[in-house]
Image (cartoon, rainbow, N blue to C red):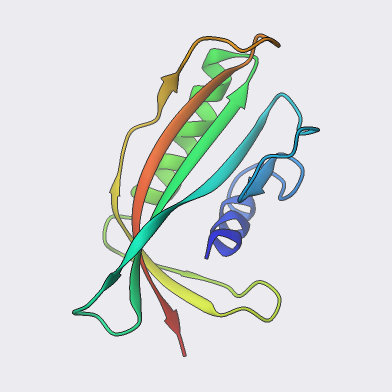
Length: 134
């Protein structure tokens, strides 16, 4: 579901998958301005068949505090701004199609100080209920 979510974000922002937007891990060679979506575990939803709660973290890095915050907010509005309308993620490769609802999303916040290359990071955490569509 992480790769499908990254594909959706790339299609609706100026981010480019595997260039400025990554799913699962950020390569050491990634540009100063980039985003990574991380899977932070989840749980089974017992009252909804085939549903699972996913905990997803979005880390946005940039040399500019304001640009990093703007990108983090763009992603936040894309995910949380839909309310409970739900979202269908198209399949990546031969993978499944997912239907999801963002249950909760924290506002992005800056974490730590600047790193050794003077970059800042913003983080936001999302709880997403997702199920595979047939």
